[in-house]
Image 1 (cartoon, rainbow, N blue to C red):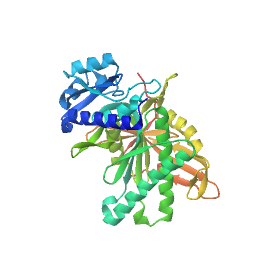
Image 2 (image 1 turned 120 degrees about the vertical axis):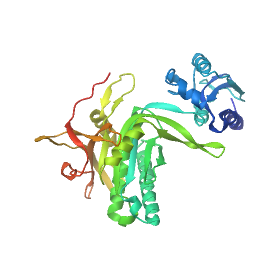
Image 3 (image 1 turned 180 degrees about the vertical axis):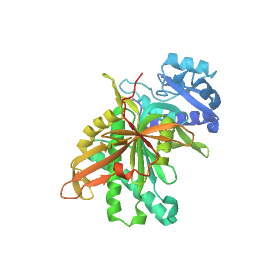
Length: 376
């Protein structure tokens, strides 16, 4: 069994080898495999990796750890000669071995990986450019506190979540570092707490120092990468891809205080895999959100939380549920649901976040009857 010092020294040695192969971002680490105490690394020019990825999706999808056969196929496709690093410990799943995840976390900083499904939130501060820099800093700090506080409160009820974020100047993309269906449900639960905390702060705080938000949530595919800074990649990942593009398009049309949920399909996980549309996903999320009862928001315990997708008029017909379709600046359609959140608290007024149908007069979107999406 390796000692902590041996593990630390081995990981440092691996990091040195990865940094040399990475060549300041000219190359990308496409994958790795282990045999005993030897880790083999596949590094290739970024352009070649991205050019081959459509023909061999495994190059970017899934864990960067690969079996020997897959690793050999990827190295051959990328015309790469494997780099071998001998470590002072064995990598594997047996007793005394070092968990492969330890290696994978180091390797991921030097590559790009694709995730097919992940929940992401986007918070945009309304009127951010119209306040002075001191107020801007205060609003960002207030929003960051609400994000951190939501993660802390979820941990109190056994729903651990690590919320990562990247700034968009006047707000943040926020996501759960963990992947998977359960992780996505927890992301939505965190959204509820963030918005509730922000709503309470607006009631109590100085208006200029607490942000008015417009918020979007969706689930979709993305690529994860680490930003190059100086001679090393940063330790935090950044997301770019279908889901972040969709959120950016939605937020561009959203109104102040509006909560938009994108139209998506999210599969559950084995042993029984079901394809859930937005409506069914939110129904599952509400069951998880019920576990937040008893947590305090604004000094009062949560008694009940409910998410409501609003209806509207399609022509002259009033419908209890509608999907809104926006057209972005490139002429592409994006569908979303207008959502309201109700947080009932003991011995306190409820917290209501979101807009009612009658508040959407200026919303540049077409209301359509909702049709369950066809899943292939």
